[in-house]
Image (cartoon, rainbow, N blue to C red):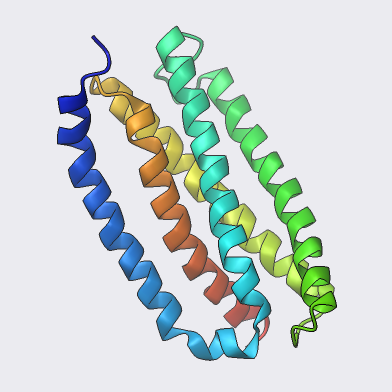
Length: 185
């Protein structure tokens, strides 16, 4: 039997507890950088977008890998062609999504009279830089998590999404403050 609720709880509960602790750390990073947020209120709109897109794309990649591993379309090999195709597709999807959302966020903020001390091109650059680095990181984490959990006889679907979304949230916040610091401050 593949799905055993006791096994899922035994492995999932410690993982989810660790993920919650890491998310608390990410929240403290946000709180510690309030001066940057007050200087650029457009960042408040950007955080959920950056984190959710990164987590979603990483989770989609992980789900595709898990399905491919289960049905035998993807092998436990770092040189597997299907795995590489999925990796490249996730990066392309991230590039398109972040570019579109950067423009949308900028104009929504502008129409909502949110004060912005940043130009459109700077904002697009920041979101694309953060997004592309984040997508690369969560894609690698997704691949490693899917492969390791499958190799150990565990269902990758139980591990990829919590790990990838936690990494996306934490790394996305850190990257955004870093890139903003390099570009603007």
